[in-house]
Each structure stands twice: as C-alpha cells, then as structure tokens.
Image 1 (cartoon, rainbow, N blue to C red):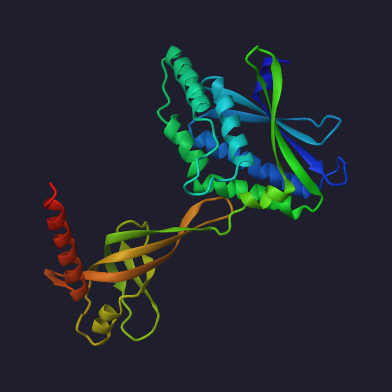
Image 2: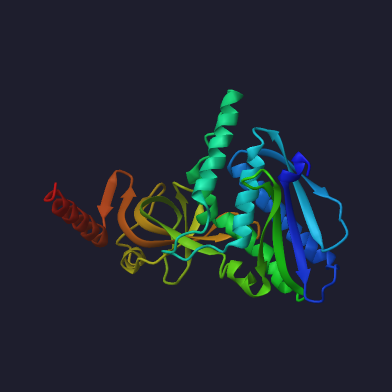
Length: 317
C-alpha cells in the first residue's frame, strides 16, 4: 500500500438489487454534500487541503477522495478523515448521553500536528480538542450538511447501506482498512427534524425606531438594531406598550429608541448557513426620546426584581 493511500476517504454504496448502478443525480448530490463537509471542517480548523477523486474501479460502487495537504502537516488529513467519518456514521448523541468519539485519539492527532508545526516554526490556534469537540457535538451547519447527505440516500429507494473505508496501520504497522457504515433503517436518525434553531434572547436590546405602528393590528415595526447590519422588521408583543402608543401616551420623534427584550428566531438554509428569520420584542423597559427617558411599568418591575435578586445573592458572599 502506497503512503498516499492513507489519505484516502472512500464511500461504498450497497444496493438492494446487488447492482453496481446508481442514479447519477443522487450520486452527484451526495458527493456535493460530502465535499461541503470536507470543505467546511477544513476551513473551521484552518487546514489548507485539496481534494482529488479517483476513477471508478471494478467491484462494488465506491467513490474515493484523496485529501492532499497544501500547507501544514500530513496528520491534518487524518483529523479531517476522522471528523468526517464520525459525523457520517454516528448520529448526534441525545442530550445527557456520552458522545461516541474517541477523545484520546483526537488529542494524539492534535499533539502530532502541533509537534510537526513547531518543527516548521508554525502554529495553528484553531486546532484544539475544544474545536474538534464543537464540530462533532455542537456545530449546526455541519449537522445540516450531514442531514442533506442522508436525505438524498433516503430518497433513493434501492439504497440499502453505505460504508466509509479508511486505510490505516494497526499496532504492528500493518496496513488495514477501518470500515464503518450505516444501514438504511438508521438513515433517518441523521436527518434534522427542522431547520429551526433555538432562538437568541437579548434581554437588553437597543433599537432606534424608524417606523412605529400607530394603529391597532399585528403589523411589523421597523428599527435599527445594534446587532444587525441593516434595519430590521419586528413584531411588538408588549401589549401594554402598544396600547400606550395607540392612545398617544408615548409619542415618537426622530431618534426615539427603546430598550427591550428581543427574541431572534434563526433558521438554516440548504447549505447550513444561519440567518435570522424573525425578530420579536417581548417587553419594552425604557423609551428614549431626545434627553427624556421613560421607564415603563414592566421595565420598572423587571429592574426591581433584578435588584432584589442581586441583594439576595450578596447575602451569600
């Protein structure tokens, strides 16, 4: 076995009819998601690699990808192969359940990488156990790409199983293939139930009002939010505040701002990119208009509750 064979990541497809023929569109879509996985992991860990495909050989249908280091150290390919194999053969562990990846092996590969980089007077601060752990356990985009891959497999009725083959050496230095795979009945365990992510809550958001809603109805307001690149549209769910606006107890002028609790709903697109899909003001605590600041009743109650909680905590200091 040649040295470069240890950089190969092979996918083997098994079909219910025992054939070696696969729908070209499904195969290309699977390959696209696989390449996206390689590319995303490499970019997150700041690996400079290129990927080459191997021509089809006789026998079971296989796609072979040669991972080649452009800059860095050879073990980068081992790390990339390990992460890719894990996310494609082990669904995300349920909350409270211990993940199945081998932390000792990861740390060993990272140590080899750092030693190799040190010899070249280089470092890679993006490569650590924490960064690998984040990719394997927490990264929403990576899980979305994996989900896309399995959606294509599920949609292809004749697909029975797929395996990943990694060439490596055993403790005796002998060449062996490490094979891990997934049967069709487990494909759905990799598919996300929804592209919705947990919302972000900003308890102290600052929004400059551009277009208030001055009449009754569930219309969207418009404002400049400190954390957004452009003006946002948002729903106002603080009914007391809305009533104060509708009855002219609170008026707006150029530059009027609110301090509020803002909920930001998020989704992923088909490539796993996260975007904010909805903004909702749950409660307004203060209104700033010129040099005048008005604290709302809800805002006052929230402030007093927080101050009381701080005093309570101080008793234990």
